[in-house]
Length: 192
Image 1 (cartoon, rainbow, N blue to C red):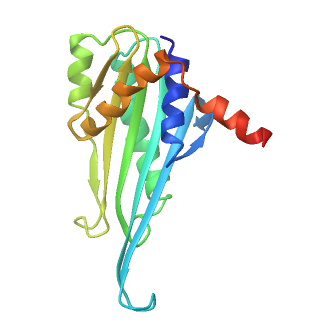
Image 2 (image 1 turned 90 degrees about the vertical axis):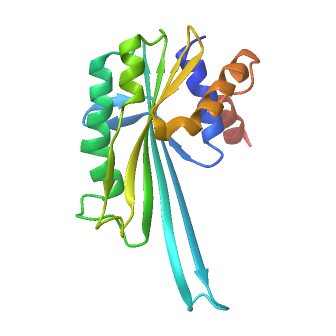
């Protein structure tokens, strides 16, 4: 199975709720795709002017295709979360995220050709980044990492990213069945 086919199928699934940008460039380096999700929830009494509370939730996903996962790639993923995703995408260069911010999930999705070594399985499992804003009164940011390998069709995550396993595992089957991918769906929509 090719990483490009897996990614194309994965983007189709994410495109239902995420805005997808292809390619995505960070500090001069091009990544195959980036996904952005935003949700606003509010509670009010009778009319919107009587707003009791509101909260904003975000998820940012950066997709990486690679032949194999090594320590340098794990370090790059951590640096992307710490030095780009959190300060630029979450805080927009400010000291704090926007008012109403509840949480931001910062996901690095790695699609690799070769299986993970035992050392890299541990590195993915122990990948951790969390940051609270004003004792979490302005929300928090949390890093998730998901690694799908093509040769052995396995999915590895850190603890907080474990909910992604089902989606990523089902994606192998969809690729094998030849379901239409993100590119095909986008081409069909532009023809309409």
